[in-house]
Amino acid sequence: MVDIATRVYNHAFKIDPIVRSLIDTDFYKLLMCQSVHRNRPDTTVTFSLINRTKSVPLAKLIDEGELREQLDHVRSLSLTRGESTWLRGNTFYGKRQMFSPAFMEWFEALRLPPYHLERKGDQYELTFEGKWPEVMLWEIPALAILMELRSRAVLAAMGKFELEVLYARAMTRLWEKIERLRPIEGLRIADFGSRRRHSFLWQDWCVQAMIEGLGEAFVGTSNCRIAMRRDIEAIGTNAHELPMVYSALAETDEDLAKAPYRVLADWHEEHSGNLRIILPDTYGTEGFLKRAPDWLAGWTGIRIDSGDPATGAETAIRWWKERGEDPTQKLVIFSDGLDVEKIEELHARFSGKVRVSFGWGTLLTNDFRGLTPGDTLAPFSLVCKAVAAEGRPTVKLSDNPLKAMGPADQIARYKRVFGVGDQEAIDVIV
Image (cartoon, rainbow, N blue to C red; front, side, top):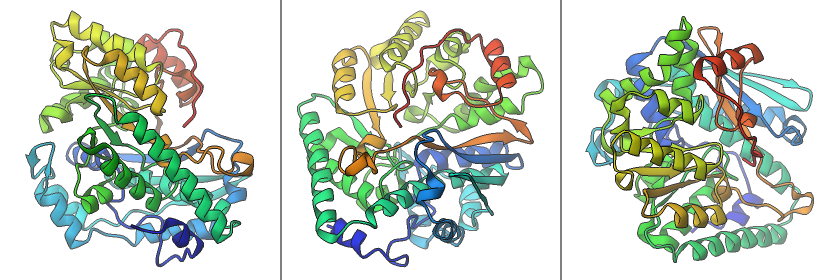
């Protein structure tokens, strides 16, 4: 096993570039990329970095030259032969050749497109503009780079023994969480922590700890490179990006109202089984389910990613019953801001009512809260979102108004079109 403290103390770019592979990304990005490559290959989209935690001054903490060096390194990467073989020949969700030959030929030739980086006060403006299938693959690497460079900036001031103690404490904290999860009967949990991880080495360590500590209850990781290295399942389906872009391209309010379902109709043609998971909160879960076509009720399950998770699950159960479906056969994936207490609570409440699963993210792979003076390694809320499509702004409403994004006039329009009323604000931790 890697001695992380020693590696951190001796960090060198050639030994430890932050992003080591084009498949050091989340599985859902590749699934969505294939869908976009098939259905919307020429759509021009702009992605932008958004730091929701303004108290973390990234431009003060992170050297611009180092940031450019890491971003340029990602642009030099391409699929290795082994990675291509794994994607082409492996079985994902019980299906062989999940990725088509046409998509793989495109992916094997891909180099990520240019980026735009500019300092704006204490923050960085980092944007990516180009063909949607290409620029969308910047999201996870960009976030991983910024998060780890921030970690490295803090760790650089520490001595070797201080680093040993820091990682020993973080390892103990994670193992104590695992010990609390062990007694939960029927637990199903996956690592969703790539985008806001402390570092690649730390995420890999966390996954190995989950494998040993939880056994069959640990069902896999969203990170493709780690899934390949550790011979475990790659986990993921789709995300808010698809309805956000489809909606931005809508010409009329009527088209806008239909856009989120058009996304899932395209997905329905490509995938079956456990890949048919609805993410309903982009423009409000309640309204989305109320207007959903009947065929969506037959899908495998729902992922809950904002708002109060228990309320979201109860809403889904009620909707399935109204549509004549048996909720006990449906899968509910909780994935927003989870930690052990919330996992325990949600599993106890919904086990037996639905098939419960958890996507554990930042507080699995980046829980260094309280371990440094001034809490300088505490996780923060950093995202990289599609902000425009063909020059039109994108909008996300969410079930939590604090996660809403887009121009004020467009947010008001989307709320009107999707019938979103008052919403309860919930503090965004990560």
